[in-house]
Length: 167
Image (tube, rainbow, N blue to C red; front, side):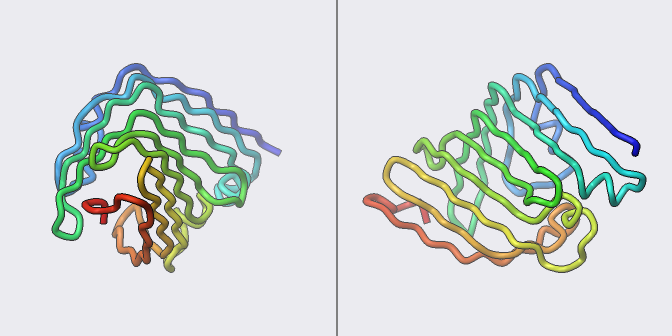
């Protein structure tokens, strides 16, 4: 059975230029010191390769800043490190470290498998958990074709000692 192995590492990336084609509202600027990609799979067809894919992407020494609006409120987000991974038919998982509204955070997100993200026309599950020193954000919902349409429905809950300005 054919086997594919992919290992790659980049140098410094200007993130603002890289995501410019995504047409995000607000501004994203900063750099990523290095991106490390490690992946492998086996299969005779593209579908089989996607179903068995093991992929890990790490953002090292990131300095990403995003300023924009969400639900009519200012959003100030900075990411200093991140990781994206999936294994076989398991969910695509992401973790990020940075600041949200200038408070340090640690966030984890997950959705459907890589194969489903690329092929399904229906809504896909999404989960987001974010912790700061003073508050916890938990979100659950669905997203439709995130790579092309970005339509989503998300229920969320914020709890903690000091949540003013975080919702």
